[in-house]
Image (cartoon, rainbow, N blue to C red; front, side, top):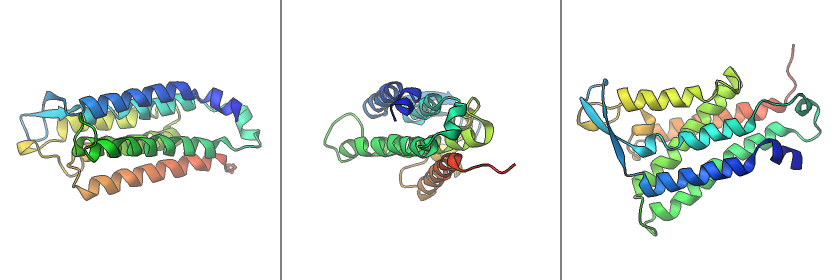
Length: 199
């Protein structure tokens, strides 16, 4: 267990995740005016669209390239990796509760919920990318999605297109269901790393 904690660089992951919480929950209402190619001429893209990329990328970075010894380890590391990814998302959801409830100032309900939803979406995509493309290319998928949404995801009156889940209103059920599905698929694929592969 000590070896797994050391190889997964948990202090780095905790630092990045705490930084994400600070930015998303305290400055998440900030926005960047960006030109749009998806129907609107320009849109004020909220910072909470990009901030969840940090812990999702840090998570895959901290996983690193699996060492050959992990394939023969008695304690299966893929199960621990799955729990670590789930813990990052659940901890973020727990941290957003007091802000969403209005107990602290800084973030409103929609910003706090968007931060948790987008982290689930990006983490799921990164985990799927890790299983299909390998560790080094895994973070490209959520990054490309965030960039595509920021430039193509807004239609007239700054309303998000149906596929632009990270930019959708928190009342959009499809964005929540899709983000949760991506997270579940990513967690499942990560957990499958412990199973022997057939040649």
